[in-house]
Amino acid sequence: MTATTAPRPLDLTALHHRTRETVTAHQDDVIALSHSLHAEPELAYEEHRSAKKIADLVERAGFAVERGVCDLPTAFTATAGSGELVIGICAEYDALPGIGHACGHNVNGAAATTAALALAPFADELGITVKLLGTPAEESGGGKADMLRAGAFDDVAAAMMVHAAPTDAVGMTSLAISSWEVAYTGRTAHASAAPHRGVNAADALMIAQVAIGAHRQQMVPGGVVHGITTSGGEAPNVIPGRTTAAYDCRAETVEDLRELQSRIRACFEAGALATGAELTLTPVGNDYADLRQDLDLTACYRAAATALGRTVPPRDPSLRGGSTDMGNVSHVVPTIHPMIGYDCADALMHNPEFTRYGTTASADRALLDGGLAMAWTALALAQDEAQRARLLAHLAARRTP
Image (cartoon, rainbow, N blue to C red; front, side):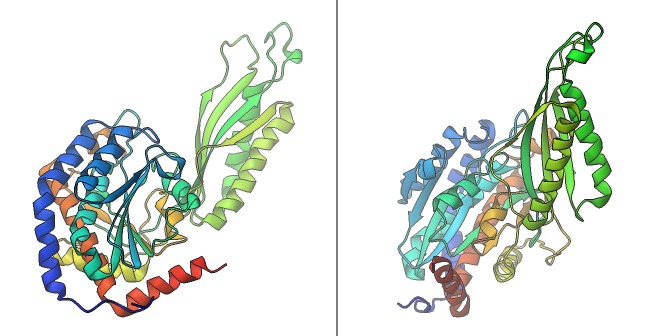
């Protein structure tokens, strides 16, 4: 088999039937997995039980599992097959502080597992390798960015995942984001007896906030800056000697993010310059790039999901989510990140109300459909000689120094 030649064409209808049967055989296990992840939510980089649950399940199914990859204790890879076309399926499983799986990552992780299980028995027949990547810390930190940098995606020709949502959607974008911890260190003093001896760290932050507000008119289109003060003094009669804050910058592209970061950094520096306080800006986790979904893969996924009876509107380029580290992957690997919808009675994501719907029959159906739609997308890619050649050529170009 050459790098651009598909294996012997197979009956796609028969493959759809066979993969559906495989999903049915694993249905109870993957639904139980989703419910178990939901019942024991774990935060970024601390998802020890969650990662183990998924890794154990696919290992029992015959996958070769490597745990703690990329120097991340809660990351793993699991592979089946030995074909040259490596299909990467990303499993997310971290939760949110205080509100559990309010972003539906229990569904995301279980759907990814479903897709991997559906494809594994046919991987060699299709000339593919199924690579399930356990990716921690999407909500904070960016495990995919860590794994991308460490080489976990170096052999991946196409990457995919589905994300829980109130409705199905394909082709949406996301904002690039960076997060900072901000600290001003000044000098305390009696606010009445010796205010001139103090260096007011709270004033430094106030000046920075005013500067950010003044900059909003000139901000890059689509730019967003938001933050909170996390500490600002202990008593009204003491000049604050230390003030801290947490701030995010978002922009439509990673290039715009760099420009926005430069200007907002200058706003924080202005607070230090005006008051004499010392500024420390500490990056929090990885910067997330904007999500750039592959149009051909998107079309394959939409066709698969529609064939399963789901209502998937055409791609709308104006649709934009929050921010995701799948964006970092998408700048390197042809990627899709469709939304898989389920009934949540208008509850908003990242809200405790959304958490309540994560183990309903509708959510269970979404994870099964999402997993099977990803599997059928991989089938289409493996059987389409032009798509296979495109993906392998892109991979070869990445590997060329």
